[in-house]
View 1 (spheres, rainbow, N blue to C red):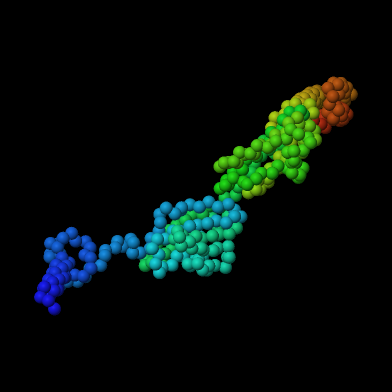
View 2: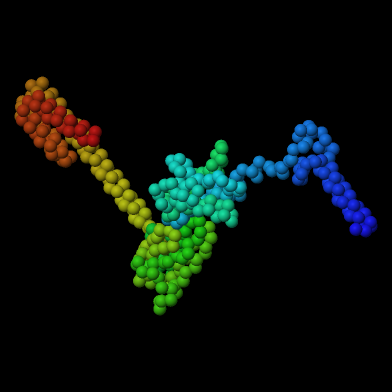
Length: 386
């Protein structure tokens, strides 16, 4: 081998050895990257035993254990009879499991993708792309509303709470249950659908349980529907006729049927043209007539009491006259004559019972006349106290 080639090889080995030595001096004899230190000066402050140990990359505990994505909705509203979906987004799950628990009875519904309840309406699905663990409740009912817990099997366990609201959409026709319109005017029925998480897909109108045909030969029938948080449907029937009377129903796709009864009037009872019932005016008339009858009866009772009081006073006068005649020793015929005259005056006043009692008293002594007076006066008192 020539001398210059041998020298070249020696120089190459020396350069390689110098690179290795410099590399070891830069890392302080530790193989691999050193995290958390800015210079070799900081490393020299460590104990000699620790300086020779390799260090691993530092990871924050939050990224080492599972945690919930706080952007997941905590309130879910579902339509009764439809499926409800409760989502729980878990990051960095690793080998842990996710469970769904119903708080109403602390019942475990699902663990992972397995269902742990006899109610087959509950099912959990996992979407790996989004790390979502979704609890599906099929055919949601009112009793399903409440708090649900998404739980991670850490120590201690971590929980995320989701509230389910189950709503029942309701349909209402304004102006019901009865609507009165005049013949030849326009029937305007307004149906509103409330408490629906989404607008109804359709709204059908019925007349006499038959779907209204907007393209019928009658013409003048139209429907306007405005969808939103509260969906409103307007049914317009122009030039109302008597045949347009009857029951009208509004049937949304996601709510119960609402009905109203329309009365088309042909000039009768114009005061009933307003929306709603018109029978209140006749009820007031009946009340006034009843009050008049009560007042008239009360006046007649007062007149009857006054008449009986007059009978009692006259019979008393007759009794006193008879008694005085008896005391003075007058003859029985004179007392009878005076009693008969008083009885005639009482009869003229209309007191048949009093005159009869007085007539009998005139044919007896003063004690019997006093008894007849007492009977007449007691009758008058009983009547006036009624």
